[in-house]
Length: 284
Length: 271
Image (tube, rainbow over all chains, first blue to last red; front, side, top):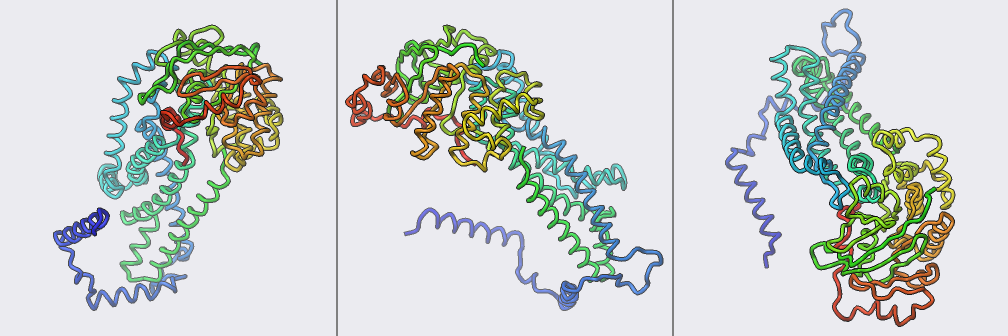
């Protein structure tokens, strides 16, 4: 007896095979060439012995020690990510609020004025649709693509990198925040409405607090993502970890590459630790 | 403190959520300062009745008057002012779990504050509010939990927060929906006794829906038995017989759908 679930699993497997066939996914491509295997071996051989000093034989006079440079790059990565997430939150919070339905649910038992009701039924759906469309446009383009566009438009400005991260992140914040608000329990909202609170008070004090802890957790997670994105933007020449990582990789200084990777790992781990501590101790 | 207790008058009130009536032509008068228990099986209309009294559910037909004023004639602002006079202790308590206890208590006053004042009161509570919230929490027995995070409290303590919030509202009437459902049976008696004494010392009208008929009989001078959305009996407690209760809970004939699944507020999910 084949149940419905087996059919679904079989269908998913068939779809995967079909897609793999048509996308020309040949498993033989994963067999490395002899040279490639050599590079990989050399690269991973340094995993447990990251460089503590420069591997270059021709030392640049006056250059700061490797670890100081790595920490400086980490600091820059942190600054870009922090600025980008702050800007993304400034965009995503209001946009997410407008992309949700919480602010135009109304009061079925008549605790709202006629003007409020008319506006809620006419203007609100338009604002809602506009906000959702804007958020979709913002996040449908990846931050690296935004970076290419902004670099072409503004040149190598630091603000261009920050905005390139903030735009798609803001759109993602808007989408996730709107869903968290829509899914937040409405019991407190109903209780405040029953206690005579106005529609605005109901949203601000009854709905927002119920979504706040999930929103905080998600904002911290996106901060982690921003650290990675900010590091990668170094490939474009910004002084973040990616810049030095790419340079060391091109010079085949794998020990240095590992040093930068471990610094990035520490940065992400620190952000995760901060997020956990903050959210455990926080109480409004 | 409120000047006077609220009285309620319901005439031929019918409430229908679209799947059959929850209340069918119900008549009921509650005098200011009275203590009334609504008893009856699940689905009898107890919660709907309480929601009609707070003005959060609008009857399909019939009239509801609070202190002699018909709710359907009130402007939105007047309706909110009326709601602010009625403190409601919800069955699921409806507290915000991830904030301090004091915030939940302060939220009771929102209906009397402008948006600007309420923002100020919630973010930077004035000293008078803090003292008053503390005094109320002390009165309900958890004064030391003022700054505790609400989700660290036990079920019984949370219920007392919900009671303190309703009192901070400065109500003229106190309504409680199944106030003993979230505490263990041993504490149920304490909670009902607390509600009763709070209403007495503040001169508030008290209405509570109760499953436990013994508690209802012990603490409430007047019992209203509800069955299938209508009043089955409405008598002083000492004149309600065991047979009245037996008839009330005799669901052999024509069972009603569960009340909460029909009329429950849409936001009772827990995260």
